[in-house]
Image 1 (tube, rainbow, N blue to C red):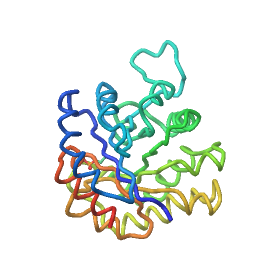
Image 2: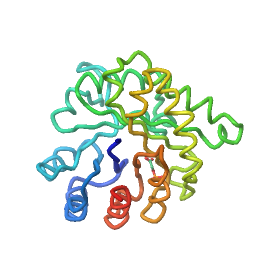
Image 3: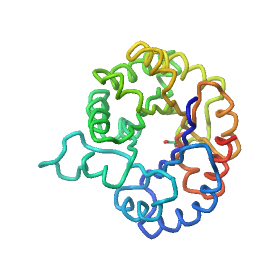
Image 4: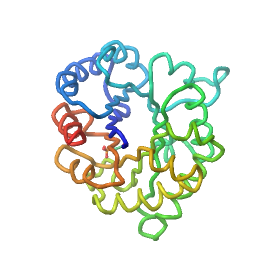
Length: 252
Ligand code: PGA
């Protein structure tokens, strides 16, 4: 049995004060939900404030990025060693980081290893662009991102990884994938390559999320699919009603 996971990726939104307000709005609604894992991923400056508010609630905290080196002359970067004092999770290789900040399968691989070595659960993002989708390259791209992003990881560590399949054309566009379409990609192009890397047992146990324009209305369509174990939520994670509705749908 895979425990469903819903993670909110706040992206570059909310001041520290705004983060406190959002968490205070979310907490009574989220704490009422049992049987799933919930993770909030605010920007770095708000991690400490949100960490304090989430203490004892059972709700997890994640960062949106990390550097693979433990420390040193890397101006502007934050390491796994620093994050692990506050966070249990970290998003790695989000398509916005791949598109705007030069992340590659190689950096995703280094970051995933650094996260695991420090006891952080990596939420590794994969997904094809619109052009790749239209060119019939979804299988090749997503399979490559999984195989290259996770290579060289020990099977006993790999079981902790969470993957988020986020087709780039669905992110922030209001044009979500269909439940059946996302289920097929996750089963065939994500879980199957994971099985070839780490064996069937790891693949069967791994949580694989869908992300891309998930909201309170469409969430249940994804969660009813057998291969989809939760969601990585962007825009709707900033809205108390929407995010609470997604979390409730995942718990059903
Ligand atoms: P969205 O973003 O829910 O706003 O489409 C998802 C994501 O980028 O993780």
